[in-house]
Image (tube, rainbow, N blue to C red; front, side, top):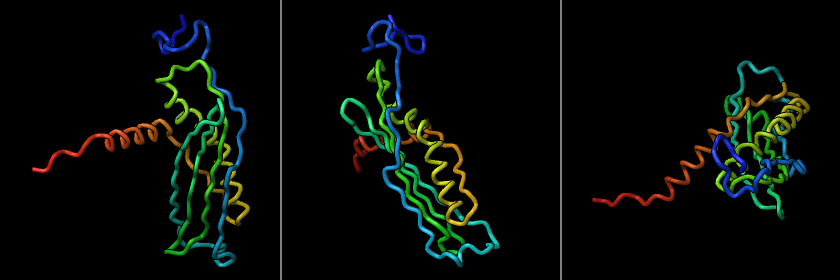
Length: 164
């Protein structure tokens, strides 16, 4: 009997090890904007405010799963945009011998964790090629993002308390 985390595996054939394979990874969409160049390339007296949003989505791709990691960001100094970017970096994953109850967490945590270093490098290279120091995005806690998303979905599913 196969086990996972010390307990019996459910819906997994006996002796079959869980597998996560990256079949492909690619830039699905990418944009880098440098709207105020060359003026914005001059030395700034203050550090820019950098705002980054992250989103992960997944959808079936035949018998496999396509996971998209979307990173959007912009850097501003005193209300003036230095640069902005939007990247959708995706991968196709084959997942085998994983219990169904673990599938969502695996797809939304481990798959983007495998994609992130490549997306980070694309953004760092684009900002450097745009005339700025490379933007090295801090590592992302995909477990915390997953828990936050699950919390949001649960709160949406609960009916609002009656008004009295």
